[in-house]
Amino acid sequence: MRGNLFAVAVDLVVLTVRRDQLCVLLVKRGERPYESHWSLPGGFVQADEDLGDTAARELAAQTGAATQGAVQGHLEQLAGYAAPGRDPRGRVLSVGYLALLPDLPDPEGPASGSAAFLPVEDVYGLAFDHDRILADGVERARAKLEYTTLAAAFCPAEFTVSDLRRVYEAVWRTEIDPRNFQRKVTSTPGFLIPTATRVTGGRGRPPQLFRRGEATTLHPPMLREPTREPANGALAH
Amino acid sequence: MRGNLFAVAVDLVVLTVRRDQLCVLLVKRGERPYESHWSLPGGFVQADEDLGDTAARELAAQTGAATQGAVQGHLEQLAGYAAPGRDPRGRVLSVGYLALLPDLPDPEGPASGSAAFLPVEDVYGLAFDHDRILADGVERARAKLEYTTLAAAFCPAEFTVSDLRRVYEAVWRTEIDPRNFQRKVTSTPGFLIPTATRVTGGRGRPPQLFRRGEATTLHPPMLREPTREPANGALAH
DNA sequence: CCCGATAGCCTCACGCCGACGAGAAGGAGT
DNA sequence: ACTCCTTCTCGTCGGCGTGAGGCTATCGGG
Image 1 (cartoon, rainbow over the protein chains, first blue to last red):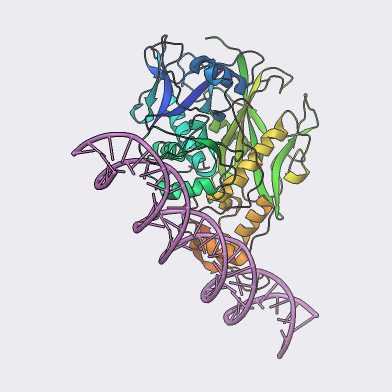
Image 2 (cartoon, protein in one colour):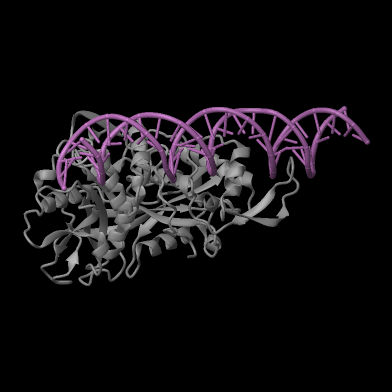
């Protein structure tokens, strides 16, 4: 069996919507290289671990066991990154994972001040090639909101149509007409399940509360404006 | 730097449309394990190689340099596969790549009888977890035809609308109304560029020849019927 | 010379969506 | 109590895209 040997790590793009802003979980590195730089949380794949196991383990370690048993949340693989020189310590292949979580009630996890959710707008200069991994994760999330019901993964167990709309607006950085949005999501079978309760105490008419339905895909999709996004791969570039 | 060390390989899902059938390039393994089993072509990542470099190198080696300089064709990363025990020789992480090629004029490449394009329908029992990688590649290709102009990657430099329609029908295994399809693809700006020439010699009215345009995305997308496809990832499965 | 086959253009109906009006149902201020 | 503001929810209208299908153009073949 020829070929060089790699250390294999999993790096997480943990996204949430906090105060109407799309935020990503970052950790401040305490060791070299890139000491005291922000980076994506991650870790190495252990023996007898599959990539998804490592991602779930790291996610639980970073966000606390609170989100572990919850039905909400989403975790999927992004891509592999193995450019020579991406890690000065040697040959390291990182597999990016995308996690979508509802905003955690307790602001920070067990690791005290070294981890934070920061708005993705303000994030630049991450360690290694994490800027690229983050960009890929954000783009994946934006694209998936178009044709899946994954936006609900950003919401708590029960939420309103406005909560869901603000998720779309935060992730896409657009404004959506509340009336047309309500018609779309409530008329899609299996997207939202109404609950008996209503919200009280806020301004305006009390909204209906919903839970997530069984549907995973949106047919027809909810299309955002066609943005200039280049193809991600091509021969003879 | 903790963590186990992996050998890292790239496995190719090379798809083409031959005789109105979606076909995948397979090679017959000449060594253990899985000796004389069909498998996806692939190889290990060498020193100073990025994953895409390895994929392009293996693709050129398997299909011949004929397709190398051509503008047609498409190559993109699928996902990483690293389940413990997926390779009996030890810890191997495979990165799947998806390649879309026009049907090669010369049936087979340099490696004589050990490689063949087989209809994806008939393919079962590949070596390692290549059945899974192939399924992921086919599903990716099917999904991408919906919202990109990638179907043209299956066609030669100049092709007719019917050629393009037969690509969709072969990949999706559906029938498409030729008139509505023609309206859709010819009215999408930048999808097809008409050439001066026409085809002669066939039955019926001679069709217009087109080249690929600059457009990469299809807005709005061309939707196939909503098939029951489960979500590919979720917490607390 | 007619016929079948393919290419290409056109019309019609329906459904989805953007834009927008209007009523329902709460809280806050006077 | 009344008004005003806010938000939720339902309805209306028009445009656009698409499925269904008619019609003509232009080839090869019997």
